[in-house]
View (cartoon, rainbow, N blue to C red):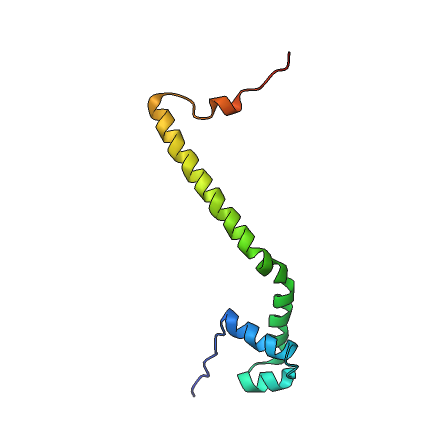
Length: 101
């Protein structure tokens, strides 16, 4: 007996299939027949697509923020090493409290 191998769809392929249903109004049954999908799988993709839509749209700003935070951490680490070698606290000026008179 031979086993059927399952097709692993990429995110782009899934979106293309969902797009055909949502924009071109191709019936789910036709798409499932064409791509050898179970309707449950199709509706799972659709649910995930709608639940994670906000994440996809906000993804660019999050990744940019994460990249900047990584850069800041690296710069602070480098600054810490420089000032530690000289024996000074790198953020002593930032940590002093200003008292009002």
